Image (tube, rainbow, N blue to C red; front, side, top):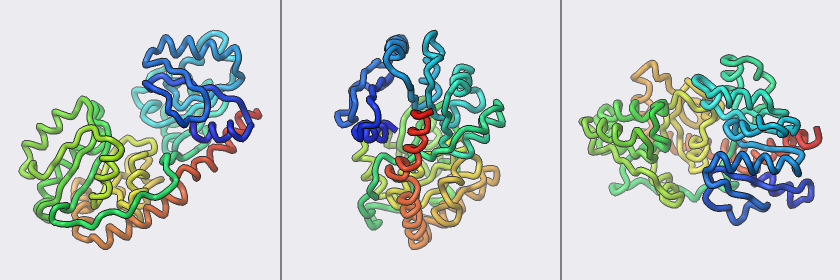
Length: 333
């Protein structure tokens, strides 16, 4: 979003200043001045309040940050923000929902996020849907052919948090069945969080534990290398408002296994670019994993279709073409 705003700024359409809560340094190529709050919510609030004296419009990337707009004097300034999913669903903080209601323009990252938010809280059917995208506009380099040193591999990338909705446990549970059908198949788990050690313990207790690898946090370069060595990307989650990792995997030409329980069917076309499994039918996940690992030609074809879908809908320029008219509408309102 900042990249689109920066391009518009350079085109002379508007002067822009940025404020970030969590970043420790300003990206060198962002394209406009950015101030750092260095993880201080108080400093972030003070800086946003000060900006309200000189800025006519505010843009937030999520409802959590938009809470600052409740400060006296800021409420008169129109703002745009996104609905991103779990932050405004069940157990959402009241301040997040209130900030979404105050937005002059409210964007949702998927039809599913908009519909679920409206079902839970009411009054959100008018949010405008704007799918997300990768930061990249070019496809990833061709993937490596699998070898003995690089066995059939399924990759999952995601936070290992207490909510436990992303599908790690389901993949670990089905892995003995997968390795029985596809000897040597490896499950690689990238990500860290509170649930890291409990998941490692769970994997160690599995008969297929030696085939479940934990990579923890990895750099972007290391993650790209893992994508290149992977046969199938799987994250059978129950709680994705959109699922950025799905389109990252599609950019790398990987077939994706997701679920029917969240926004994944908007991104992953079942039977074309991968599969959306019903987790309430426990056999579906291992059957789809086994099917793709045993049918590399099918997996490759689905991956190529996914990459074409990424190029059409989920590359940076596709997001820019969706977001820019909404941005201009907001600025001119």
